Image (cartoon, rainbow, N blue to C red; front, side, top):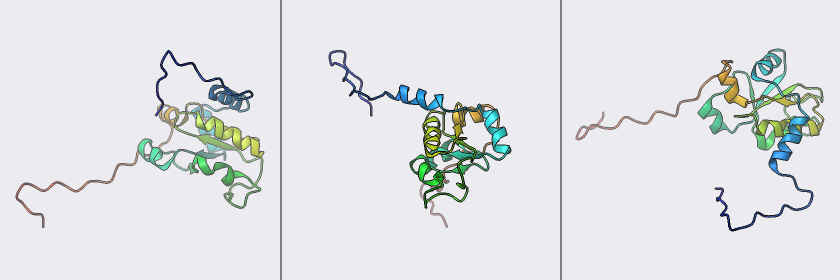
Length: 160
């Protein structure tokens, strides 16, 4: 977990050429034609692949978009690079419209920029992520309830 910095210790000096996450995110977003949830839904209905990169536990806890393709972030580039033997059957070319969805629209921007680096020039993401999708009232399923725990036994009574 992040440890708060005390006021008497100096901030580390970043190495030359390094960029902070805010700069990296801004550069990624500058390359994208980001879609608000309504435009993302229209793109999906028109044939774009809506790709949910959230981990399974996050999808279960918050819900999913019906018909979206779950591809966790850690394997995204391998699944969408048309040159890669581990690609998905949908990854057939570089003009594939791909709309990336994460929980709040941060990781998805970095992921969409990575797909652009692979040559998928139509890749983009959803502003505000799944949270904004839900708030917009667009189709969503879940969250998935946790498995029911067994009922507690009454004191002194055995279950049959």
